[in-house]
Amino acid sequence: MFKYLIARASRHLSTNVCQSAPLSDITKVWFTPLPKDAKWVAPLQMHYIENGMKKDRDIVKIFNGVMVVLFNVSRQKLIYVRQFRPAVYHGLITGNSFEMPKGCIDLVKYPPEIAVTLEPCAGVAELNKSPQESARDEILEECGYDVPTESLQLIYQYRSGVGASSAAQTLFYCEVCDEQKVNAGGGVHDEVIEVVDLSIEEAKEYVKTGATVSGGPSTLLATLWFLSNKA
Image (cartoon, rainbow, N blue to C red):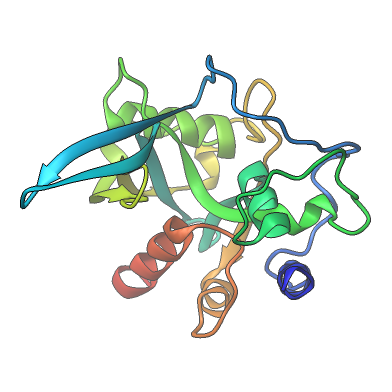
């Protein structure tokens, strides 16, 4: 089963939509238990009584997020980002097993490129900012466009990962032009992000029925919304 998953991911990454040089040089991968002072997630257990029966459910608290369907009207291109996702890598090499991989991972057998995703511009919803302000910051940091918050159109507010995490997500639509491009993008701090432009036809091909999408539900949601409402 693992070989099938790896082969399928590798085939998908070789398509024209995702084809590109490696994002970075990942030379060593290993896994450890989550420390108590983890920065981005907090596991906990909820206990409750429903219809007279005591129930326990595992929950992983994560930050709320913002995402943007970004469309360059100058070039008629949808703008996405590519990045290596450790959680996707872990999921691909472990399948449906909870057993933690031991030792260093064989990077020849499991090349990091299998976990490079294509996603809409996105990030954490900052506690001291509105969702629009957080989205504007992400557009500038990841994709290099400087846009006013007024240009962000609200599409959806919803919950992701409702079985375990249920973070609030806010999805926006924003049109940009070449004149608003002020830097190359690529993220900040230790982020390694590549900006990818897709034509409308490439986007249609990417989300066609039966496709294997190298990204989360937000990639499908954002792309299908655009194709249904703007294309």
